[in-house]
Length: 102
Image (cartoon, rainbow, N blue to C red; front, side, top):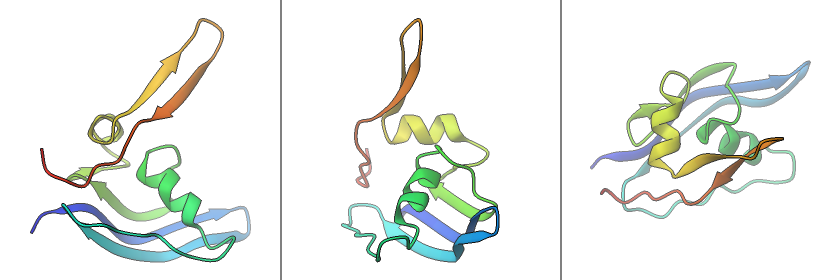
């Protein structure tokens, strides 16, 4: 079965604080997946990386077959993340992350 999300060896640090240390997981298309952990475990960091809002220090992550580091525009389109701009400021809107094939 195809993978909607694939994460291998994901690492992220903020200065000397290691938030992600080699995170690995896969989510099959059409499945339900829960990302669980205690406060400070890195859940938000993983989601920010998967939605291209943050770059990983190392490792790889793909969403619907698109690498989050090298193909961020394709990832954003696949998850319906779009930039909403006003003349004075821009913000990002996250509509939905669907793991079903289209």
